[in-house]
Length: 77
Image 1 (spheres, rainbow, N blue to C red):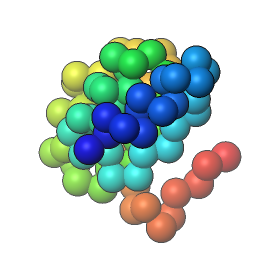
Image 2 (tube, rainbow, N blue to C red):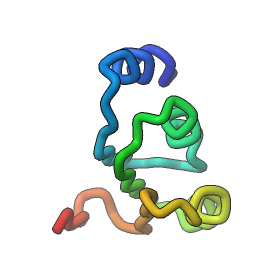
Image 3 (cartoon, helix red, strand yellow):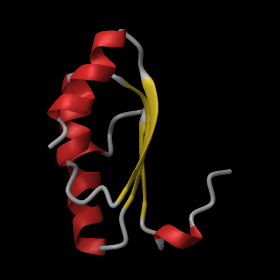
């Protein structure tokens, strides 16, 4: 699912600020980190259990942030 978009971004040789609405358990984030295209990642996830899992798996990375919020109420300040 993420392979083509990630490979296109990776080919440009840049790193990106990524907003992932509905990040789930972090499958997309894992692929993006492997491709080394993440400058900063913000994952929004309304399901507390999914958020707990993804925070335990990736939360120690300094360029990764997660929020448990309603997607329609997100403040990007």
